[in-house]
Image (cartoon, rainbow, N blue to C red; front, side, top):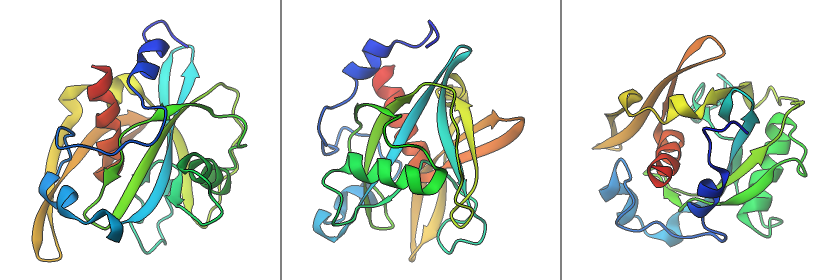
Length: 206
């Protein structure tokens, strides 16, 4: 990994087991997120994979297929709902990453968890942070994923690229995080829970 990325510091910022967010965690829409009863939320997990490139650490992201009913075309981490067969959020994140992008489950080197992230749409997300060492061979499931790409963490962590926007959802106005970045020669707009989890790691590493 490049010299500008402190692996020891990364591990110190993560929890070894799932940990709940607290009032100190900066959700974009804290009132909506924290007021939802946890028992009513759908547990899910995502794989926040950091690719160890010589030119710098990069986050592995996907763009959801345009034909999907929920969040078509949105940039996200590989992940999905926890199933009864999953003994832990790590198993969910690895299983979903294999299904969505063909990432072999023994490749990610699990580093730990970020605090759970609640969404106003009713999900309780367990962010699992892992390292990946190239070369990587991915196989995308076209029914779910339009593309996979890597975005430099230095760009995602640039505060000049961070902002908040709002939308009316179910009759109420909700705020959400947005990160503007360029990856693979394209301008990318990372928003919602994905941006929130990236900012969660950024704030802890800062």
